[in-house]
Image (cartoon, rainbow, N blue to C red; front, top):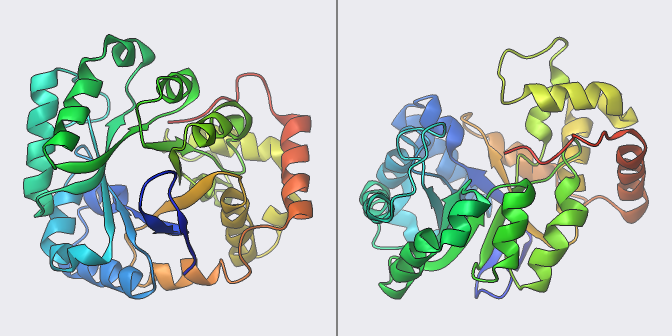
Length: 298
């Protein structure tokens, strides 16, 4: 799998990364997690992304692939230990969260710790950033980052203290392409695309019950890209290749709980990122259809 530089860090990251939310929230059995991650690593993936609030994700990763720690870069997030709807930005609790993540992941350090959806007001207070900087100084993380969207992400970039940015970008979520990602690149930040295939929301014939997916479903009904009307494989491939064609994106985090799925994901990229003309077609459709409130979705 192709690898590329990750901002100004010393990391060369694979085009695809593994997103650990599904295995955590779905309580995927450990043998299946071991097969899934082992297959992904064997296919050339070298980025595993998780978070303290992703159910049993960190623990599952630690139990199944910690013995292969040298084979992958490990990213996690802090700030929502008890659930994403219950953030806690107390510096003391953030310190504890990072320590607990290391225990669960069975490692003495991660490669990046991201602040997970931290608001600009809290960012500007400075205390949360100091926690990450001290963790870096102590060798508990090699780099520090921010994960989030919209004005909060823009402010995180403007502060010029983070090494990494994880942000939503895909065929149904393009605000960041002009508003945030170019500024992150200017700052030398590595950029991770989350939700890179828009949760494949177009596959649902009716409105999904999952609130997390619904905004993308509504948008895609109106965007109505031609390529979404072909085969599923071609549609997913085009969506993923679009995201990886965004200038500045180093890796796209794709989540799944299905063993052997990463062999299929890797095959989607046989032809590399989407070519310039096809990329422009998607961008033009977005420009013509997108509404003012189609902001980045966390």
